[in-house]
Each structure stands twice: as structure tokens, then as C-alpha cells.
Length: 144
Ligand SMILES: [Zn+2]
Image (cartoon, rainbow, N blue to C red; front, top):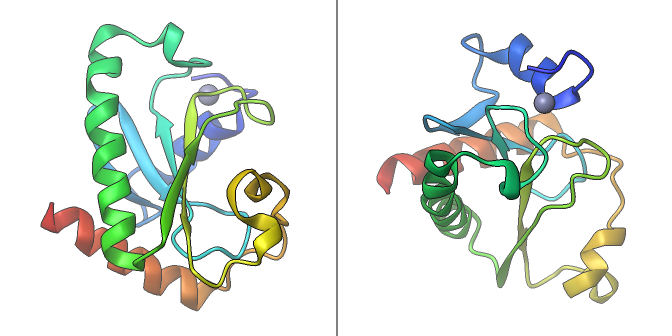
């Protein structure tokens, strides 16, 4: 836990009190993104504070592949995208997390592929849509 870290602080606030996290393992948590209006945009976060996988413990590295595969499957099952984008930058928040983004058929061409990096962060997804897609994804995780 790093007091100055946005991911660590949010986890401390949310643990055990809400459905903020859709899926959890021993070393990782998965939540819906608070940014963009892309329904099903998930974030996989390490529970322990570290920058990237070079600093992960062997047990975290071993678990991560399974978490990523399950998260990709859950997104695919719940949102039926053309592609599922995954990447980790750790620039804005230096705590290991991976973006898992469903790219739908109707995504404007300028945001397809590497263009996803310029997708607007605001406005966020409306609450009702977020709850609805989060419920579908939670069900998908349970079915895996
Ligand atoms: Zn952190």
C-alpha cells in the first residue's frame, strides 16, 4: 500500500463494501473503468503495489496469465466485441494494471487499433449502463 497511489487508495476505500470489483483472485482485482464511455472497459489491478511485471513475485506472475485469460473471456462473453484490446502503460498511475477493452464493430475508425489511445476519457459511462454491463461481466466470470 502506497498512500500516494490512486489504485492503492481506492482499493482501501472499496474493499468489502461494494460491487466495485467484479472479480478477484489472490493477487489481482478486476473492475470496470471509471473513464471513457466504453461499456465493458475493464482494469485488472495488482493487489500489491508494484510498477510492472518485472517486479512481480513468481506467484503473481504465474496467476496473471490466468486472470488475463479469464478477464478477456468474460468481456468477450458479455459484450461480444470484434476485438479485445489489452495493454499496460503505468504512466498516469505507477501501480501495475492492465486495460482490457472490448472494441465493438461500431467503434469510430479513428479509435480502432492504436487509435484507442486517443479515445476521450470523458464523459464516463452512465451509471445504468455501467451497472448493466458490470452485472453481465460478473455473471460471465462466474460461468468460467
Ligand atoms: Zn499502488
